[in-house]
Image (cartoon, rainbow over all chains, first blue to last red; front, top):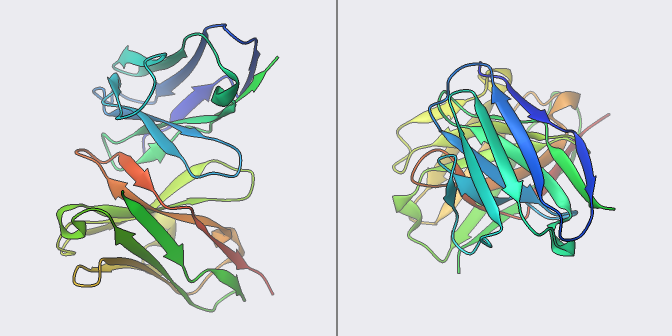
Length: 106
Length: 118
């Protein structure tokens, strides 16, 4: 099974800041990676697919990058509505999720 | 508008069965692969099972193989998860999710809680 190591587990940042969340795969996943946002009490929502493609309706302050085993999600100009947990998911070989990053506003 | 509405959750004793349903609307259900993803309380997400558009191909995580069965009825626009021989570790919120162009999930239901306890 492909393991996804996500960091940090939690993150506190100020409004307007830029934050970066990272996922490392245990083997090359060839950009077969998605990012999801899950707001408290809600179901997950797709943010990014194929490592760097923005899903429909997602603000352009969200971006994804990476290749091979290393991937990242960047949020520019942090806003209050970005408070959520964020998960990566690989789909190169079956499906596995990262353990999540809880983002709070400082 | 795409909608996925799960039902059928609840409290069940270990070893018993439960069947979840997911009613889909707002898109051509038969054109999309579907899946179930679970989330234990305060934990992360875990893929459970997937099914192809016609239902002929199904895939399961190891821990549920032989106990859970994913199926679909395209005439009723409904996805199912038959859960047998339930264990306490199956306790989670179960989400129905629509497969995108690749095996990521572009739409999710609101989730249904399954609690396995005596």
